[in-house]
Image (tube, rainbow, N blue to C red; front, side, top):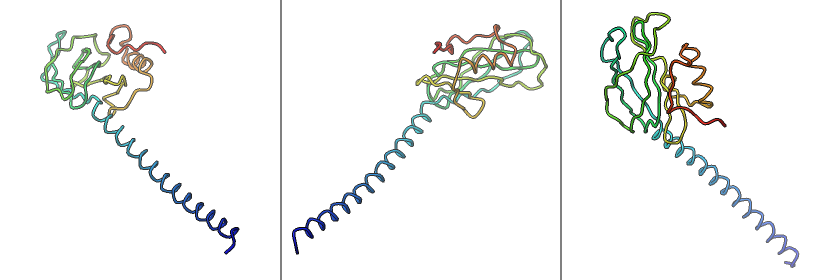
Length: 174
């Protein structure tokens, strides 16, 4: 065997080991990325607020309505709720710790509704988590990309712009 053949053999062996190392490094990188996504999803699930609202009874006209609020998820740093019962719309801000047991709160009347509702219903339920992300809790806890515009649009749609304000949800302009 000549020295040229030995060098060519060593080069081929080195290339084979380099290819083997590249394949396993790529597999390790993909596994790390998947694990990171799973960890991020687990963190998001742990920190995302999941408020549940239960109506305790029919409201008296022009009186505050009592509802029971429970948070099954992460801390709700700031939130807002608008409900309609009968002829009235009710609104309030919410702040709930994580995994909060049910507690009763009073929602103050905001204004008369445009149409009468037979059953009490929640029209808006928005939450901000500890990470500063905003969630539309009525739409399967869908994240809100532009909270300022989204909240203004929702209040405009409900004809409550200028009537209801959620100072805890105000976002600084970008």
